[in-house]
Length: 203
Image (tube, rainbow, N blue to C red):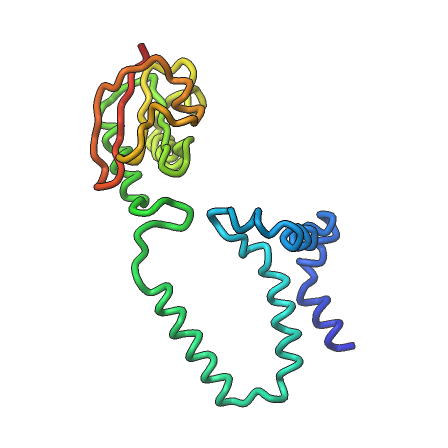
């Protein structure tokens, strides 16, 4: 009874969420079991879907093996896990979570400073590297109270495009660039060894 009460109290936020949202996590787990290929094809593994269930399974596992656990084994496993964590997470990453390799906030800021230095009006920004809407640069624009029509990609006179140097932004199917035609490239800046910033002008 104590175990059941402890589980209900400890997991009450998760239980309330499940009841309120038609057992969302449970349905997601079933979807994963029936269609694992969908999750494997995703660029970001859906680990967050399994956090609540994995914690519950861990508690059950500990209840089963608690009699064979010794102080030395707990210290040994903890030390091994700490060593693995240090090996995985101590090296400085080349990019933040969700961003492309060799791209980070400092490059976003560099691109923003180049845009601001030009002093052009009636423009918009497209980031074809990982976020076509260029939310980070638009945040910096809003922070500095630079007013543009942030959602306008159909009649803006200029368009800044961030793209991989090995790719051609002109054939990208993204709406933000695809609708900006006909256009001519006015300027080009190198952000780093992998990415460039282009300034396009609508004809």
